[in-house]
Length: 199
Image 1 (cartoon, rainbow, N blue to C red):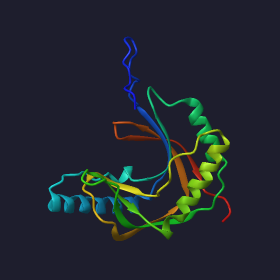
Image 2 (tube, rainbow, N blue to C red):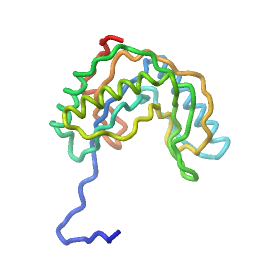
Image 3 (cartoon, helix red, strand yellow):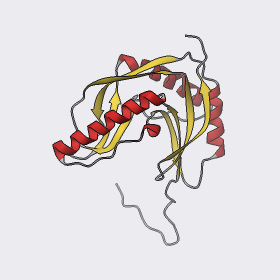
Image 4 (cartoon, rainbow, N blue to C red):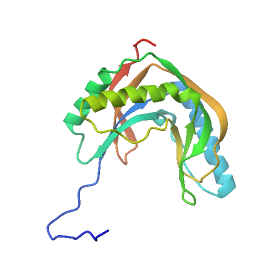
């Protein structure tokens, strides 16, 4: 690969400041239970490997349905509007989700995220993602990355084998469009859509 030439007067692009994504959130009691489990997981990792990792707070636990991009200097209005149009066109009935295992997204020997995952219990999320992806494509938004339904519990965790966990279940009745203030651990809900379609 040829070296990238530096040209005088050509500045590096500004770092991204704002993210945009669709998400599903657990109800408050389920989020509290997941957060407690995340705390236990971090404590175990600290004892086992000396790694000090901080679990995500209950109000930040979510499933990212579809990431739409990171941007510098605010969110592009045309992308936000296209996302809202696509979401409004999704018709799907509410469903139950169940995560029943904990896994690692770390690549040994590096640290990485510890996440909740599932098999049959996350099929509804896959269907919602696929329906949303189809509507986004209709609105001219390029396909996203492969979707792996998960809830991130903590970052900076050592790699570990996937193992069973106490199931985390909740009823998914809506999804939301989220503005993430990057580096400031803040999420702003831009809009919500209820699942009211037929099964």
